[in-house]
Image (tube, rainbow, N blue to C red):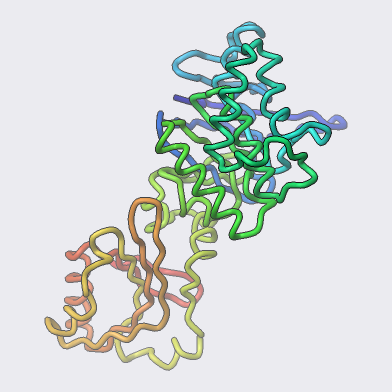
Length: 344
């Protein structure tokens, strides 16, 4: 659906060049919710503005449905942009217009007939749950309601893609969850592909199928959300996952257990999360597991859990237990003070 090919973006400011994007390649499949996550300055907002060429790449190509947008005339580009709705953190609503006018006015500018405008406004206000707010002004709306109006406005053009630039960053946690649920429903019921930019891992956790991690203008890791959660490869990705799963153990406790077995981190993904793995270990081997810390979360498609466990027993029995856990589909890593070490 959307394909970025070797995108580089350089900004010139006061005779100094800043490389916002550095050789970025990314493919967003039709019908997916694709998250791009990174800290401030990573380049993610610049990337999402490349999708509809609000920002033009210094080098590289941007494809939409197989067409290179960088080669299109302005009229053809405007036509393509109507297929890509966009919502922002700041809502961008017209303060002097009602909810109805905020949705209808952009349609008028593109020549949509009056009756069609009325039908679309009614349809998408119902989808976002604001049927009773058509005559209200933005000043009378909550932050979540304003974002719902912005979503309805984007949907009214009936796009195939929705571009979301930090769409929940200005909202409280409960409202964020409600907006994410709405976006998920839009994706499932309307079949709209969503490219979502965020700095919040819980946003990725809740609705994304795939994720790319950005740092310093580059994509440093990407894949299915469950894979990135289970085995993050880069320091940045590990920090994001750690923000949801704080599995650190007090150093004093770790020191007290040294020499009496092994401390490991266990990640349970999908089917393995439903198995009583530790109970099975105690029956099969002369090993006694003690849970030191743990958490479980529901990702979009499946549960994911992480435990730090002390396996008390001799080296032979402990290694047998670890091998058995791996056979059950559990991802096992050796716990180290200051980091984790993979156990093979």
